[in-house]
Image (cartoon, rainbow, N blue to C red; front, side, top):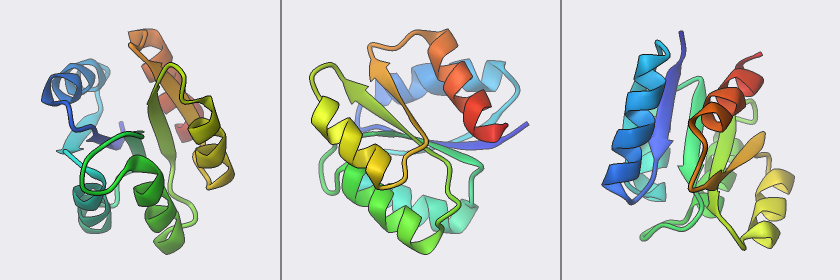
Length: 118
């Protein structure tokens, strides 16, 4: 299937998403903040990135812009909490392909991944 980078500062969420995606046959790698996401993206070249917006060190929006700056074809799906609509719009304008609202429905996560891989 696909190599997917999951970026979230909450370890329990990364573990939950990894279990979901691995169960669907994907190869999952992880990063705990935006700075690590950029480093991991450049080293691993995943097919899809699922990235939280609010993180320490470097937030998801800044990381998205840097990843898209080096790879305009990057498939990035943002993970967002309710009430972050303005940031989501900015992320879409910056090149995010989709977004998933947390707490997320597992089927919605899988659908977002399938959508960007199609």
